[in-house]
Amino acid sequence: MNCINCNKEGANEVVLGVVVCADCADIAKRALERAQRDADALVKMHAEAIRIAMIESRLRPEINSGRTDMPQVLREITKLPRTEPSGRKEDNGRKTAVPPRGRPPGR
Ligand SMILES: [Zn+2]
Image 1 (tube, rainbow, N blue to C red):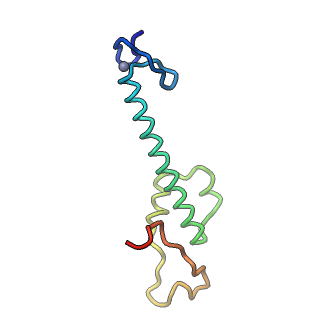
Image 2 (tube, rainbow, N blue to C red; image 1 turned 90 degrees about the horizontal axis):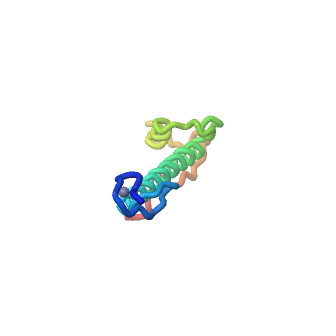
Image 3 (cartoon, helix red, strand yellow; image 1 turned 30 degrees about the vertical axis):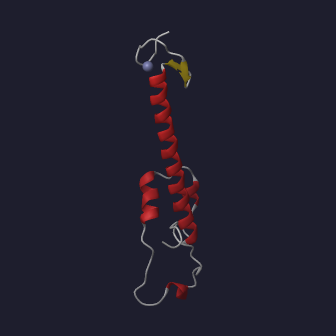
């Protein structure tokens, strides 16, 4: 049987329901692994955006509706913390215990 992808003989692996040769199977599996890593990274970015939104009392229904697009997530993550030149953050009655932003402790 020939590989459906490259037409080489000796297709003996099934990837995603498609019979392919070992070489093409390897390529497909690597692509899948990469997609999984990208998806994991995306979930982490969303989680971080949601975490920051909660800490800053900005979590609203729309952020959890699944319609959050990447640019919005990036804006959430890269948003600079609100700093007031005079007076400290604790003075306005907001939460004072803000955990570190995902940075490993110490270095
Ligand atoms: Zn092939």
